[in-house]
Amino acid sequence: MPSGQPLWPLHEPEPRCPTSTLTFRPLSGPAPARPPVDTVPALLHRRAFHFRGQSMISAVLPTYNRAPLSFERGEGAWLYAEDGRRYLDLGAGIAVNALGHANPALTEALTAQAGKVWHLSNLYRIPEQERLAEMLVDRTFADTVFFTNSGTEAAELAVKMARRYWYDHGRPDRTRILTFEGAFHGRSSAAIAAAGSEKMTKGFGPLLPGFTQLAWGDQEALEKVIREPDVGAVMIEPIQGEGGIRTLPDACLKELRALCDETGALLILDEVQCGIGRTGRLFAHEWAGVTPDIMMVAKGIGGGFPLGAVLATEKVGSVMTVGTHGSTYGGNPLGCAVGAAVMGIVSDEGFLAEVRRKAGLFRQGLEGLVASRPDVFEGVRGTGLMLGLKTKVAPADFVKAGYDAGILTVPAADNVVRLLPPLNIPDEDIAEALRRLDQAASSLKAA
Image 1 (cartoon, rainbow, N blue to C red):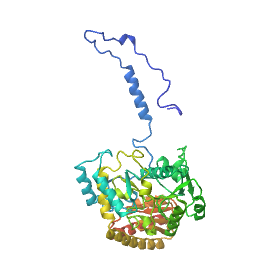
Image 2 (tube, rainbow, N blue to C red; image 1 turned 135 degrees about the horizontal axis):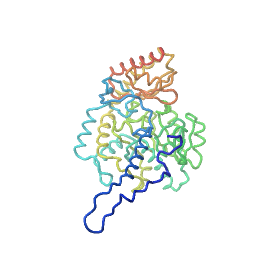
Image 3 (cartoon, one colour; image 1 turned 120 degrees about the horizontal axis):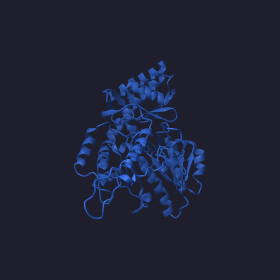
Image 4 (cartoon, helix red, strand yellow; image 1 turned 180 degrees about the vertical axis):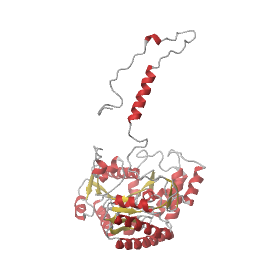
């Protein structure tokens, strides 16, 4: 096809049906034989073939740079490819499969609920939703919970809730939300505007206004800007995941809480990736001994089933009255049944103590790996089982080398490879992970 020619011609003349072949059904009497008019159907068929034959797009919208791997089943920390090869999964679906693949307790919760009722909508009370909400309220700072299907939906509500709070309190001008360079809050319109990076926002303007991005770690700028009269909230990840496993020091989070208290700004914590036991506490902010006004949760809370939530204090959550927000699928019985099973396991103090022990074991091994491969690694960062290897090679190259070594990792910004294993990974799998990471590093050195 000549360059620039449309796939579906805009001005192609329509063929006229030959009058000699046309007959018309009379208003009464038997219908005549069907005329041999096939010119137009042939044209339509040619057009459809012309369009599909020239199309280079896949049936699945190509927004992902997928690895050439396909898995047919998983068990614990392991995935099995279609060719039978085993891969040790240190990505856990990007911190989603908190209890590993095909966890028996989660499978039982899902199948038991599937035999009862799948979906109702929020036109009715949902006992499974109420149960999970009560578990979250009992275990956290929150007084109330709204359930979503994902982290980006949680971000949307967090933004709405913060702005509605100031509207209801007579300050509709306090709409500005401070965010930070390197942040990732999802890919919806509000979420990309909040993060503000060119990578996520280019071509999607006009962006939702009302966000100011500050440099990560610039306390001086934060202390100045937060006092500006239109600032209503601060939104931050205690540990940036996509940003490269960058941990906000406990002292900084405490200072941020104090600044919010001083100015009245709401503190919104995004614990989509770092929450649900990932750091060895149920939520990462617990290490600093502070609480937010609003918190976004997803990923691990569903253990692999799409589930998210926004947790809030009564002071803030009470502004969201009937009709101010909603979700058709959010808080459905299936998702909440699985979420309750996850919470029942992960919120146990004995389980969290084991996460911390495993994290120490893994961290010690990674420090040794970095020391033995100074040409490949610069260091280890992170908290609990939300860890990152700072590399001297491109993260994508290390991830690819991992495929050959039978281990799955996740690239991030700042030249970091993320390690996000299931929270219940056995000690022997940690040892095997260290061996395979070393194998991947060795192959890069040899290359």
